[in-house]
Length: 243
Image 1 (cartoon, one colour):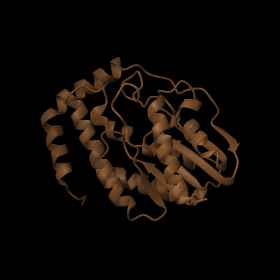
Image 2: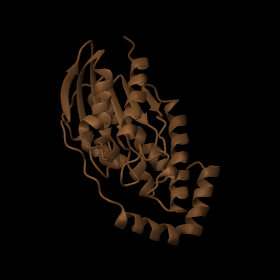
Image 3: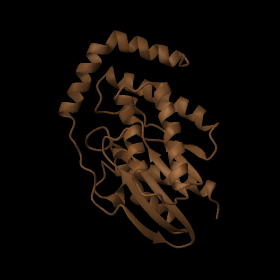
Image 4: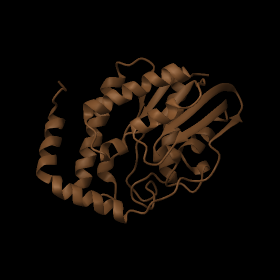
């Protein structure tokens, strides 16, 4: 039987009390929010000088760089720029708009087996908006981590914390509060699980709720947020792979 938490009880009560309104607001957000494209640019390459590092970035629309004008301004491009002055990178981006954890798992499992030193993941927002339960979400993180180990043998997997959805301008209240509370609950559960899972780590960048950090759709990161995110991941990688 799944563990019942205070956050879970609050979520259940809010779902029962606010369900019809949340459903209407969710439909409205989908109808009126601009659909930004994934930015153009390379999704694999070699760059830099120094110690070799094989890097895979995978996940959802944020991993794909939605909200940036090009891949150079997106997460993967900024991460390559941060690391390449001191490392020789063989890097690859595997991300798609709308991907849940299950979608990303299926996509990555279908790729040819390869070797990466570190895998960076951006997943969870679409699981939250899709109504996935906490226990099932954690089970899917564990299954994804196991598959990555089997197929790609990474020394480290970095799970990015869910962003502060309670600050997303595109979401009206109370939907913003409801999804934000769920995202915080998922983050707490993820941090607890990762503390007991060898080789997997939490990367928790600080996202600012100002216009410079949020894309024009009010939902995705902007270029400044991608830069800050990449800097945080680069620091995490430097700690895990000291030169």
